[in-house]
Length: 193
Image (spheres, helix red, strand yellow):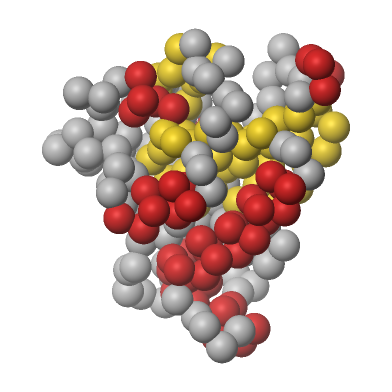
């Protein structure tokens, strides 16, 4: 698509506290904007790759993120189901990063309940767990402003070598949230290790 407005976006920001630790940045190699990442060098040789992922809803309409990705995949691959293709491609990337010894933090807007289904199975296959739900098991907050069932559709998955000291979400519509600048409705994550 060459139109100016293409829905669906990911972003990641390194605060001034960690910018000196950023060693590399990258993004989804397809150019679809499905994920982006920063690589951080920690103490004692620990390397952490922080990834932000967007998994689109299966929605009709020519201008939706799902349909945009569907058109791309139809032109470039025989399999063109965007939600499944994301997990196939992200699995390949995560497996490569894990093979190099990186610890992973993956923040995802999965557009499905992250405790069950494909999202849960995907991260279980990688040996990762959801850090916020691990700390707040009984009553997790909603992660979208229209979510009235308190079922998290966003998640923050980490490798076993990372242990959250504190984990939570920012409130909706904070004035400094980057998603407000882009019209997003989801909340930001904060995690301390």
